[in-house]
Length: 162
Ligand code: C5P
Ligand code: MG
Image 1 (tube, rainbow, N blue to C red):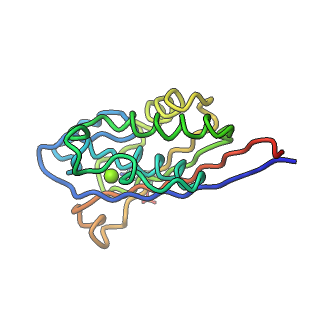
Image 2: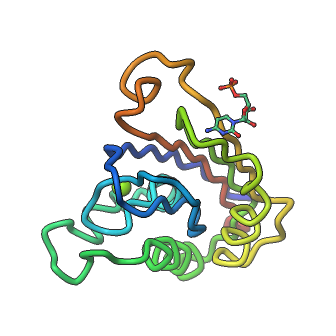
């Protein structure tokens, strides 16, 4: 028998002129970025929450409070690495992850492969087990009006059941 678990993650940050735009650990050339205490990488934050959710271990803010000066400007790959280490410690293997970034602009499709490869490297997975998708918000709502960006993630874990 196999013990299979699924976790869901979502994140949303405001857009701010002059901030770096970092998605999936990859720097995207753009005149704006996402505001936040850490590097505001919505994609890695959503993915971290998906892994924590699958383990029922709370959320990213519980593990890395945004009031803690240690995480100011922090590179978000350490949040994802922490969640991936918990997955391993509890005996689970990541089967696959899938993600969507919702940002009106810039066009992100040219960055799909570097983002996919970077997430795969952090999680120790083949790139073929990491889905990376992009959507506009059709110019509607805060994302569509360029006020914010969102990311969604889902992760499936498994381990042999006792
Ligand atoms: O949102 P919409 O369905 O119009 O997006 C069409 C395609 O544009 C997506 O499938 C995606 O590949 C690409 N896209 C992108 N960068 C964005 C939003 C969408 O490359 N910021
Ligand atoms: Mg966040």
